[in-house]
Image (cartoon, helix red, strand yellow):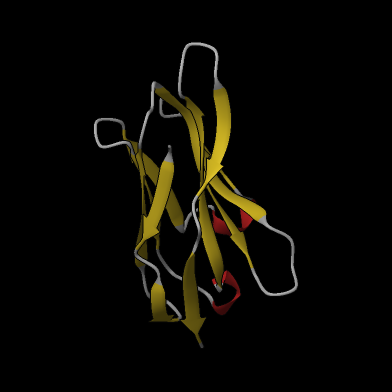
Length: 120
């Protein structure tokens, strides 16, 4: 079975930084797009950043210039470097990956989330 495990969340003051990691494991043939989403209490889950297999990135307007997404394909891991954090960045952050587990089997997988809290 495929698993995505996030780490790196926590409590930080406004203006601080955190680095999230998400490692994929299990029966994986190819990992296509990987991304980070976040969900604040009472709000919908929104895309924060995504990165394709060839490294093309896409960032939400609210985090451009502050967050960076990267991946290490040898480690099957995606990272989210978050700088200049603001209280409005507070949310549960989820990792997602589009994974082929066989030549014709492809699904989206999600991690269980990691809490990021930014105090003012």
